[in-house]
Amino acid sequence: MASIKTRGRTKTSGSGARYVAFRKPKQYELSGKWTATAIGQSKIKNQRKRSGTVKQRLLHANKVNLFDPKTKKHSVVDVETVLENPANPQYVRRNIITRGTVVQTSKGKARITSKPGQQGYLNAVLI
Image 1 (tube, helix red, strand yellow):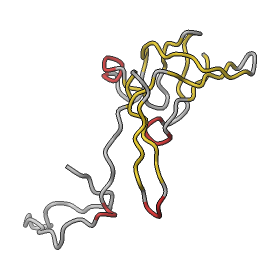
Image 2 (tube, helix red, strand yellow):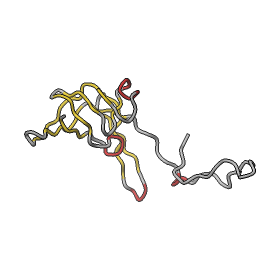
Image 3 (cartoon, helix red, strand yellow):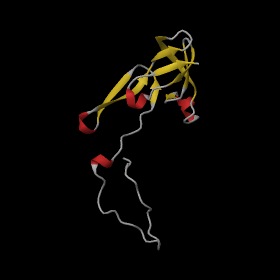
């Protein structure tokens, strides 16, 4: 089921009569599906958007670009598991990564700063 990204109205009028749709949704009004980025072998899906731009969707990831604020250095490390997710507590159980997720890496705890479902990579800051 595709969701529509236009501003909708109520399903009924003031008297309680049901509104009837005057047309089906246009393709540009339909939004894309949500990408649940999980821990696993890296897999990226390219999705064409308006005006020919391409949005990379990260489906699975096992590496993260980690920034250490003390040493001001970047490194690529392995993601072990999801520890905390402010978006939804159920994402911890399912190991789903979103922006703001706290993950356990080989160097310690890190907070994800990128949007993996829209950017195609994982950036994180060591906590």
